[in-house]
Length: 424
Image (tube, rainbow, N blue to C red; front, side):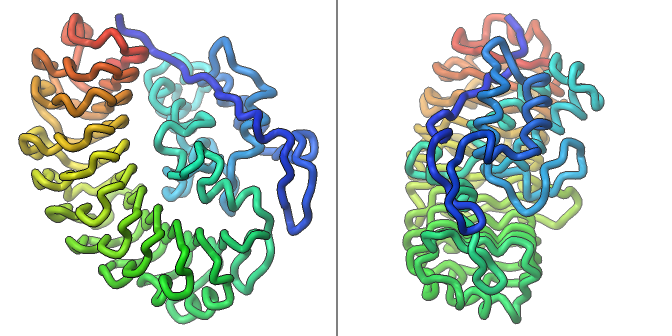
């Protein structure tokens, strides 16, 4: 049975009565005092495009109030900043709503509701973020870096702003250059655990980060002009859990780039703007030093066509692999390449270069925990071989929109666990 599903809002009521620090002053965080003006637009659009029978405007407003904000307002058209394609922010959620509205409804929110685009993007636009509009944390969504920045206050430290507990430093859009960045970082507390350097004018990774911030857990370098990175850039970052350098023109990854980050959980390196030069390979054993990695997010690398057979070897804790807008083919998946991904939940190859039917042996026994699989945007896929989905025991969502797969092709092969299936 083919159907399109809308995402429900998951209410985060646990945050409605806590104290937060805003502008250096502690305030009671009730919804009336703390609601953001942008929540009205978000909840109106989300409710129309994504809401189901359980949608609650009040619940949505409560959730939205706690979404972290970047230094620019969210937009609901295709003029978004590419760095807002990921991370736990209202901006990321607005971006995915804009995709659903523009691509699914031609700008009409009511038409968008009926489209496969809504079924796909509403999960990312929801409070949970569904693997994309979120960040790794160790406490069920309470302690990811953006949320800590949002709720921890705002104190000026030179070019940056720091939270009251001196653990989060926000240096986004601070006009930092290679000449000024080290000086700006040196005045920050050594207790800093999360460092945001989005949208500055850096051409290399600042020196001595590990010495300045020995307890650093997340480093965001998104939207700079860094053309090369080396292992020494990240040596000594033993506690680092998130490394994000999206939208930087890096064209080569050193095999030992991550040797200094043994506790890394998220590696995010995507391009949101087509036409930029990208990497052409992920080195063999690239993740050998980060066996506990959970999220691998690499969009827009048009030069990527195949994996080395050992690239995911030993990654038994990995939950997300997302290679959107690359050029992978079925031949680019060597036999056994995914075998160690026994915890994988999100298998995402939206917009690649697959041709022919989905292979019968693509999903092995390793795939029993996969709940979402995406082949959307691969018009060359023209069928599904017998047995292709047999090991997807717990899959909830399969996206085959903008492919050549028909309703006849999926008849009898879609697992009974599927709740949302999109077809052309």
